[in-house]
Length: 79
Image 1 (cartoon, rainbow, N blue to C red):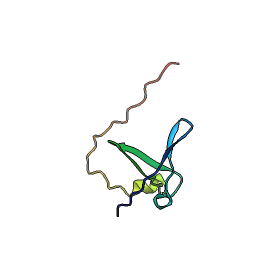
Image 2 (cartoon, helix red, strand yellow; image 1 turned 90 degrees about the vertical axis):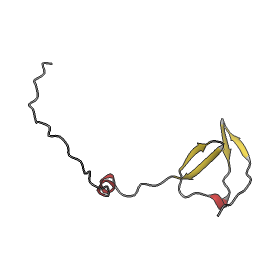
Image 3 (tube, one colour; image 1 turned 180 degrees about the vertical axis):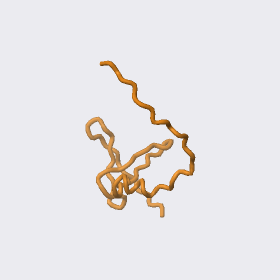
Image 4 (cartoon, helix red, strand yellow; image 1 turned 120 degrees about the vertical axis):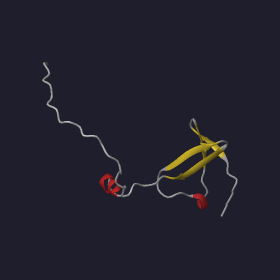
């Protein structure tokens, strides 16, 4: 479904702006904008779901051997 509509650009202080028509409204209060060639792409910012610990729990475990690290005593430091 490719909807296309002509819009006007205007100035808001030192920024160039465009009014987003109702049929193109994005959810939330933030968006991601990137430029690809002559195109500007605006997409809804993904909202984080859950905590960092919950997200980390969804990751697959690493299938990698890590070398042993000896637990050496700390050398004293003279301040």
